[in-house]
Length: 628
Image (cartoon, rainbow, N blue to C red; front, side, top):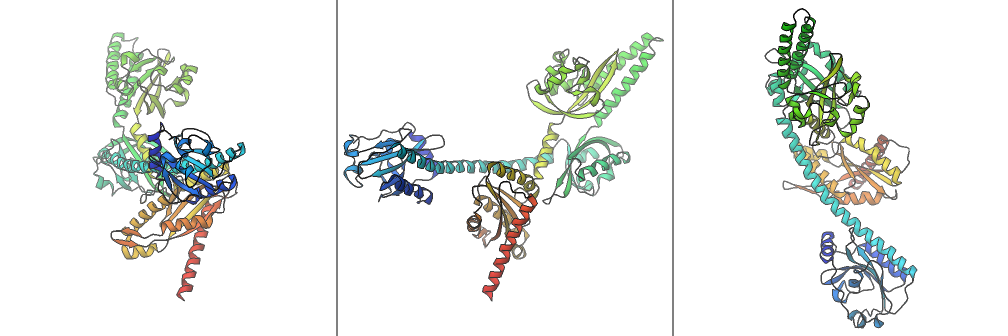
């Protein structure tokens, strides 16, 4: 008897089998159906799904075999895993490799054998799908194709399980990352260098950080008893209220405004405030999110620069009358301007009409990594302009500054993306002005790094799409994702189930065990619900004790009873919380979305809701009848 040698990917195969947890597992109909079909189609009394372990071959499914495993040295399948196609033995008694094999000389008296390799996603050989006969026989090309097709079905099931295992590991890592993100957001809010606040729709401060309190001179506890109107300079109120109204009506997603707050000591403080709107689960406005930056120093520098510019113009007008005195004053003004610019909190860059850098202050050196000596004389697009924006500069340098048309952006404040010498991109806020100088135009810009503000805003917007209790997507996120899921169903021509779940008796849990325990029950139920569906299915908390599952990728719409029964079985076990066995159950309604159906998101949710309430009504009626 010729023993098959160990394969080169021996360790890899054993690792995949261990990861799949399939060895010594219970029989499964999905595999048994394939082996029965193999025996029937290929007219053999024996067929099996064989997996090659370290010292044995183990049968996940078999037809006509009385044992679940044999020694590996006896296994015909141990030879199959060394090839990539069908392995066929027409007559084992006439084959020198197998004529004295115990499976040939004894039960089950193998004479004919054909097997096709089974592989992992990465191509690691795991075993074979084989058919066996007790008499010699031929094996046609059509027979080989049939066996290959059946083996492909087994491979598909193995690959699906392997992929689900990988997805589970990825999901676990993602949940850990979400917890980390929340903690980081809390730390950013409390320790941010810029002011941050949540405000009610009535303008009252709901939550503020220390940085905002420092800007306006109030203690955080004092601000919570005020509204933004109480500390806003009256002349700036109209612009603020107008923009807030556009935010509430959906005309804007966010707005940025320079305004003045009245400091607790009575003087005005210039700030730059960026405001966005958070919405509740129903999509209604909930509260404002504000990021506040103290720009008093920058305003003072701009005013000083403007004053120096006016002084310079006056000195030039007097040049014909007192050239020497004017020259001395001009030099003094330039020295003052240089001092202001060098100590400004923002980067200051000036370019001429050709886009050549002619001024570069100390803050620009720190922000972009180029020294003043290196930057002066270089084209601006060779330093801070990203590659994708350089073409616009080269097309019309005489009218362009920092990536935008000068005629449209001069004397305005815009947000752009810049690049450092090391190639790192960062968002900046740019204030651009055009200055006539000796018959030509200089473009002068203050650039402020807003990376922290932008990152913080994105984090706040992400929080607005999550249910704060369970961490699930909220109604707002559900209404955003459902149209995408419907579009995917249309493209793939597969069906989607919209499952509506409502916890039974949840009010009684709140009344008897308290609202805190009720919240814990909701969180535990949400965790169990997520674990009960596929990782690719979306689970959302709609409101209260109502949940939604989007179950995509259904090949047939006829899944209602089977899917609902499966969910009901997985969700109905009692929850163990603080020594309490809390019975839980859910009324489940389902609405199927079929490709191309002319229906809206709200109609789908409403029909699923109606189906759930019909289940709840039927259940109550049945209980009442039994009680009677």
